[in-house]
Image (cartoon, rainbow, N blue to C red; front, side):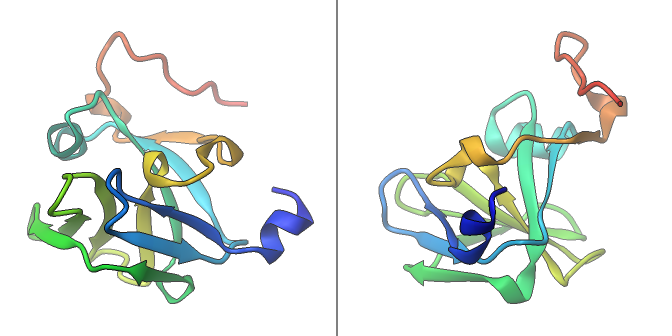
Length: 130
């Protein structure tokens, strides 16, 4: 990410525009999660998450609905259009996981690793380790 991108907040939101959010870089990890819960909740073969400090994240329009998807995690989504937006995990409550696909400019954030690769679908190409 360029210095100019670091100075500006990163924005995103749901498909219908009812929910908007912003966060301030620079602490960002980007991962592909292959767990079965992410697959089922998103109806996708995996979910790419940006992990940012919770103190850096805020909703700027609307409030999402929530789903306790497990004893450890709560997922937040738009009740109007269903877009998955955020997950908060009790194992790391100081971090907010944001769906890459809900960003206004997801092209700026390439995933660098896979998590829960043991449940990755066989036909999904893993991220190469360098």
